Amino acid sequence: MNHALLIIFASLLAALYFGIRAQKGKDMNMEQWTVGGRGFGTIFIFLLVAGEIYTTFTFLGGSGWAYSKGAPAYYVLAYISLAYVLSYWLLPPIWRYAKEHKLVSQSDFFVSKYKSPVLGILVATVGVLAIIPYLVLQFKGLGIIVSEASYGSISPSAAVWIGVLAVTAYVMISGIHGSAWTAAIKDIMIFFVVVFLGLYLPYHYYGGIRPMFEAVHAANPGFLTFPKEGMSISWFISTVLLTVLGFYMWPHTFGSIFSAKSARVFRKNTVMLPLYTLMLLFVFFVGFTAILQVPGLKGADGDLSLLRLSIQTFDPWIVGLIGAAGLLTALVPGSMLLMTAATLLSKNVIKVLLPSVGDKQLPWLAKSLVPVLSLISLYFTLSGGDTLVTLLLMGYSLVTQLFPALLFCVPARPLVNKYGAFAGIASGVLTVAYVTIAQVSVGTLFPSLPSVVKDLNVGVIALFINLVVMFAVHVITQRIVQAREKDAIAGDETHQPV
Amino acid sequence: MKAKDWLGFVPFVGMLGGIPFVNRVEPYVLGMPFVLFWIVMWVVLTSGIMALVNKLDPVNREEEEG
Image 1 (spheres, one colour):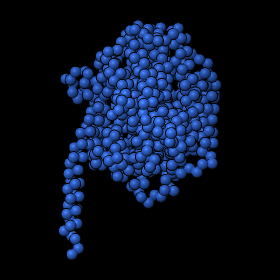
Image 2 (image 1 turned 180 degrees about the vertical axis):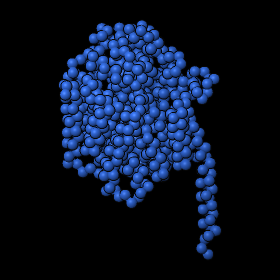
Image 3 (image 1 turned 90 degrees about the vertical axis):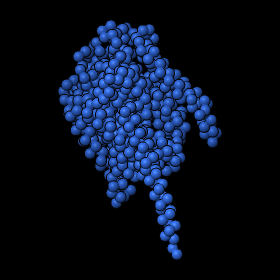
Image 4 (image 1 turned 180 degrees about the horizontal axis):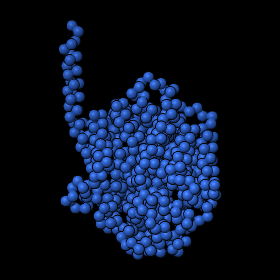
């Protein structure tokens, strides 16, 4: 075993150890396991939110996209910052309501607001469906890190297996407390690693950031700006807006809202979190540096660029540190994702369908679903060939469909009824599924339109259908509901006991 | 909507609305192509704007005292 692997496995063991310690001496009921007893202050929430956002996607996918696509990668920087702006207004009312009603999952929120457990099943299902590609993304990242750091002695699929076993064991042992602690260590590590790589590599190969960009620009003019067609400016703007809306719709991100101590935590965090996204800038620098230094990585292999360049540049022990940081960026979010999906399935789907499951059995049921979900994601990891960004965008287009129904139920009385919410979400998600499977874009649907419209993220159409169906169904069913209520009242009057 | 609420739109308009006018490489600022610099600048401005929003929002003062 080389030094790189040794360091990576040592840090994995350390993370497991912290996870077990954090959990000791705490009675783990559902609220403890998933929302940490609602006691997290500004710093912990900062770490949890940051911990979820800065995943292997940031690390490998961000540099991978800069490497293979260029300017379109900038979208990541834009959407994360803008999502925090939205959070200032969106999160406090959600948090307050969730605390009052002791909610632990995103689906709970919809159930409670719309008074419809069936809607809860739909929301939970959408959440789990979106989480699967996100989990696949983490597992893929883990596999890349372990196999690259082994210098070829561990095959990518064996590496994926190792990663999946580690994440599964980790989440079954520790729950959210482990996540928050490891998130702290991980964030410090990843910060130094990314800033170091982002500055060192361009200086090492080109003597500075600007000479590096100039070399890339000279080799491929147009790579550093948005193209006229395809991933153009209108793609950028529509994708940023859609992902901003989807940002807090991820069940695990939504769930982390609940673990805050007060609503103020979110408002304070909106100042620091955007600055924190600047870390991505250094990730981009690495990706751009790699273009001319490790050329020839095609398609999904672009995600390897950061590690390939590191291996070419550094000694194995530094590669080990980079790999260890990368491992934690997969472990922490991976465990959050698994835990959230397991909670949703057990509490908001299985318990609703089988009311005989008792509250005592719920944590056990959730934990036993963890390995099942791991195996499903493992299957897709080993069978698919998408890039990390493609996977992320797929998940995003699914969760974004929850946004209208959520927004309309933030006021004390939801603006649409439960039928509207259900039909809206369902039609939006079906549109996304169709678009993904049939590989449709706005351009293929309406080939004669100007490219400004053609390049719009196809999620815009799904969201539009979602809204139209939601209001249509709301208006139609509202009449029936009201008519029925009237009948019921009238019926009561005629059947007055004489 | 109060002034602090309108401020929330500024980062969106600045970062996204500005892009069509700044989609070019030259001039490099801080070593970055101009369009990348534009986005980075707005990330920093967003943080400043949110600090101002926090300051203007009476909710934060109430919770501090309470």
